[in-house]
Length: 253
Image (cartoon, rainbow, N blue to C red; front, side):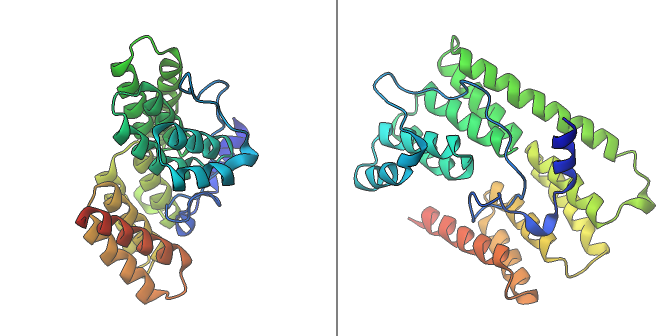
């Protein structure tokens, strides 16, 4: 626990990307450990070893079936790359919207990414589809427990006097609200950073990402552009800008 707390304190808003996992996403932290037997597979689906990721990616590229998508997403998760699994699980759910297994695994991925409310929502959906699904019950408890820890952290942060609320405070405070899906509150907190540092590109990236979660893609694009105007070499802003443009293109189709 002490080690996890130490890692959490090292979160920096200027490095909001998942550690070497998914370059188009925004939070920089080590993912939560995967509980034993957290994932589920279809009866006919065999989980491939982690060394087969390239093979699985090729299989999905050639034949994006439900089983292939779930197999690849599980390989990403098992290799601590949960961010890369999200799109594949979403695609799997489009193919089979009644799959409790896909929703359970989506909940695992989100919880590993510390997006606890999204994890809760996905596991809840899995249980709506299959109320006897014990893995989903376990994972729902896992996500719920982690969310409660964040809520306790927020309570502690709210006791900090106004005159001691610096950039680091507002960065972490906003991030905690982001973790529990309170995107408006995270935006409000991150906007406070500009009162202390008007050119803070980390805050621009963070707020842009919250807008992405709210499906306000154009607002996010405007913020990523502003970050790049202030700091043309900002790789995070470049990645997020590309991500936002990609999402906008998807919605335009």
